[in-house]
Length: 355
Image (cartoon, rainbow, N blue to C red; front, side, top):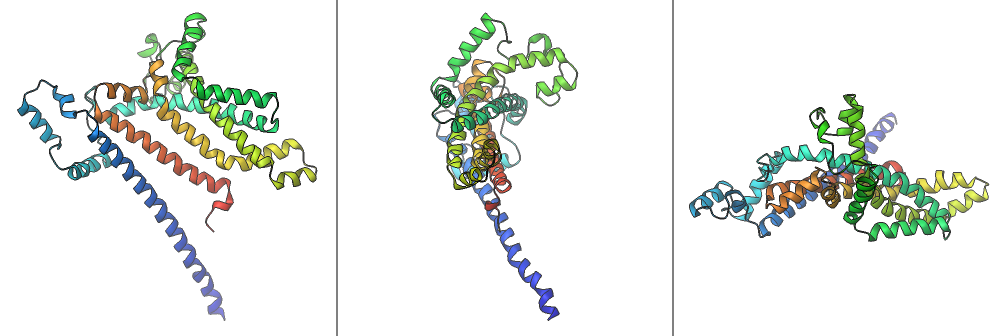
């Protein structure tokens, strides 16, 4: 009798461990397959584009023997499957090659430019989610009212007006006419040699060093492009929040909560929004990823020295190592944020947890 009692936990633990192991294995398998797919796509895109990386290095007037030698050194004379294997080995060690445009390792350039993009996109998503979610909730609660109409019009404008046009108009109005903000760039020249770039995040570095004049100058450069990105993410987040909240407010548990006499504020913010946050996590995460990779036009208009501007300049100069390296980084961000939303799903919604 005692033997049966003591053996039952072990028997129960066996299937539970197997389920956990299967979940982890599947999770890692999805990551590996997705990343291999990303690397395969970037590799073959680089090979089918009508840009010869050898000519980008040696020039189109180089002798044939020089072109042949460089092609051999780069392994471009080998079969595609061999080239892909070499490409995988280099990528796994963090070697994205050397940039033709800057003559630096691509990874070094990405480490230099990416913090500027993260700083811009992070402030943008804070503005977008910080205003978009409450506006979406308000529009759903006041469905058909003035607030709902204003939020829907704001979303329509955000989807319709090109961001580069808004950026140019913003510079003309707030910089050239009113002088409320600083101009293009990330920092005035007068501060460039007084600020030490420890982390690459200028707001953090200037605050840590106690250089508050430089901090205010960085913020003056940052506020307009971040607000534009925030507005475009706000348009999407508010619309999706409104849709999720309308669905939740029509559920039976809301009717039951009202019948019990719970306040409308508690029903909306404690119950309906909590359930709406489960799919909304994906919306915010993908919006953030979109800002990290889709701020190319914003960075171009504002001469913002981030990853988007780096990829654009590299593409214009046929610097394929830099283009593919930046593309892999952006793709890795999408993969990472998708995995993060999956984990947050399990935290926010117990029904998705493995039983």
